Length: 151
Image (cartoon, rainbow, N blue to C red; front, top):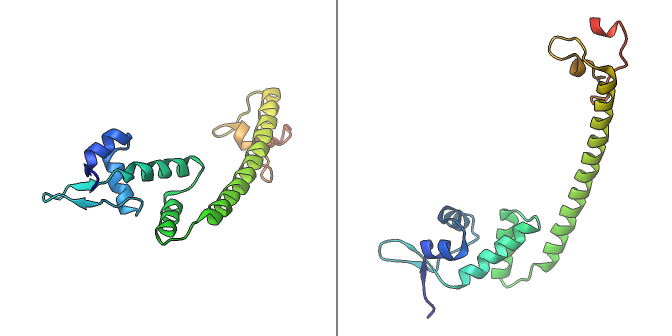
């Protein structure tokens, strides 16, 4: 029988906070091997392998819910590698879309700042630079005309 470790020892050796270990248990990511007569959680040495799996899964973008689902699959005797690849592909696609959005936003914001640098200060109720932005293109300033200050 392997040595059983209390939650504090697991925390100290793994660098994972006790509160996080309890949360992982509630989230079905970890399951204590038992409890002491006083109710302290006891873990076997395999807990460190599980914590490493959780850490590595998070490092490539998996959520705790996804990780718990993968663990349940493995515990049921199924190997979830195909699902891991599918989820990773979905995450990559979402990331690429987000990068494209951010790239577009950066260009629009750069254009706005350049226009504001040319325009200088603008009168308004709070800040004429913001108030002067074109409604359909929030990052593009309206061309400054003598009438725009009355709007």
